[in-house]
Image 1: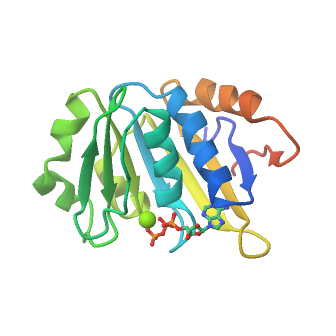
Image 2 (image 1 turned 90 degrees about the horizontal axis):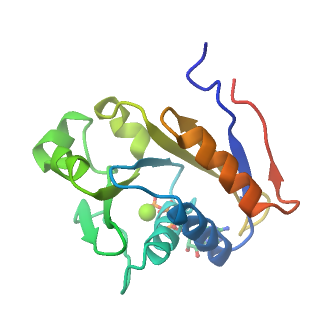
Amino acid sequence: MSAYAEDTLEVTTRSASQMRDLGMRVAKALRPGDVLLLQGELGSGKTTFVQGMARGLGVKGRVTSPTFTLLREYRGRLSLVHLDAYRLEGPLDLYEIGVEEYLEGDAVLAVEWGDRVKGFFRPPYLEVRMEYGEGEKERRVLFVPLGGSWGERVTGLREAWGGGSQTVRPWG
Ligand SMILES: Nc1ncnc2c1ncn2[C@@H]1O[C@H](COP(=O)(O)OP(=O)(O)OP(=O)(O)O)[C@@H](O)[C@H]1O
Ligand SMILES: [Mg+2]
């Protein structure tokens, strides 16, 4: 059976604020130790999505891109650890940064360019794949649940999001 056998969810957002809303929805279902690996090219909306997650977790203050700092930690209902793997060589760099310690704590980890360091993580995690759609402001977001309770949580998100801007397809 493929690792992608569980149902995926595809959502189309048409503005940055819609992308933040989506991040907020996801935040409602977050639990300590959760890992989200975000992938998608420059400007596809990874940081914008994490800003919504932060808001949904009750983080006060601004969430900025950790491209140069590599990692930022924010306090909310749960701690949010925001990591940008853009400048990393590969998964081994994450050991040096000490990411394991965060995973053992009560934090939620959101990793931009997560595909570059995927070898570091073992399921369960949620993959969030972003791509440009039509026009300047459309972005497609594909949620790929990998193990644990992510399948159920993505199903919950599908029901909560609703609307016509959503298609579901198996990822093959
Ligand atoms: N539907 C949308 N979703 C997200 N961002 C959007 C959308 N429409 C327009 N934008 C704009 O696109 C940009 C997305 O930037 P963002 O920093 O979130 O991307 P990123 O994937 O984190 O990029 P990088 O790879 O440089 O880290 C922002 O300027 C945002 O305002
Ligand atoms: Mg970014």
